Image 1: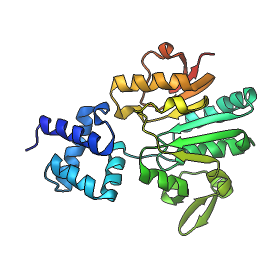
Image 2: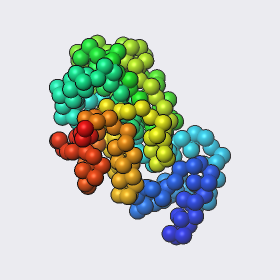
Image 3: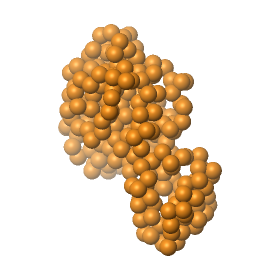
Length: 262
């Protein structure tokens, strides 16, 4: 039977070997998921799990994916994208010659590609740079390919599907102009990566906070507040919130949508 001490030692070993500090994650939720994995895979112990992660690259990639539960879809939460299309993007394009956009925790690429489609519909794709980042190598590799099954696109409007995807091999390949407009990078949001970034006019960090402790969430928001340009927009998940946005120079304009004070 494993103990809380075993789990603490596991977190230390994991950080030493793989560079990701699990102390920043919500502990009870994280420990429960890892114990479930150990039982399901019949690994036996936290020590054995570390050994398996060190020896099997594919298992390590799958483990990172398991930690973050990569779930996303195109046009997820239409309310957000309606606001972007009808107000935020038009506002940003009216005030800036070039708009910098960052999709944090981009998973398999659905979110940044949706943003590229919106910009294309507004005839402004060439006026934006879209950065998409995720720590998970496997998810990021799938995102770069831009290939999706019929099931993944079953809610896609038919006009968007025909205009921005080519049907091939039983699925759909996103068209080159959309795929090439997104730059994918590996980022660990718990490290100080923010200083090297340009000023961002729109940052989407949806369903990322839910995995982290409150103090870690606040640290990320503080770093982002320095990156977001004056009057820029910051969007989080529908089940997430920022406790005191004014402390970070942000104002809440709609549920999940914040704007940086000029």
